[in-house]
Amino acid sequence: MEAVHAIVADRPQAGAAWLEELLARVASLDRFAKRGRVVPEIAKPNYRQVFHYPYRVIYRVDATRVVILAIRHGRRAWDPAEVPSGA
Image 1 (cartoon, rainbow, N blue to C red):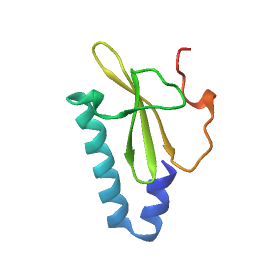
Image 2: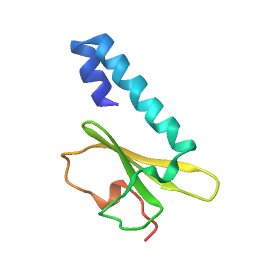
Image 3: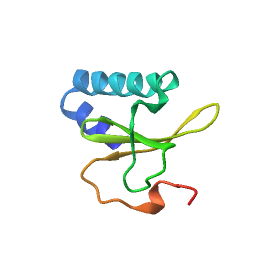
Image 4: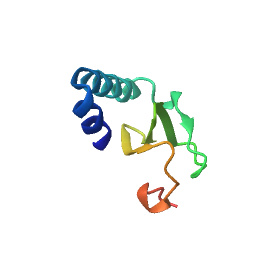
């Protein structure tokens, strides 16, 4: 992921810490899948997002699993092709 590479290039320990925090946040979705907000661009209750500044982790909650669809910078313009919504 380009964010980690950029952080690691300047501050290796900070990049490693950022990645560990991101992975912990994503892992917690296994138990608390609906804690994220509904993705406004999709507006379906099973498409959610959590933030790990400055990134959005966009995921889908299925009956038996959580599927990570995208990790994208929060300032990037929305591209519907980037996150399949099944619409």
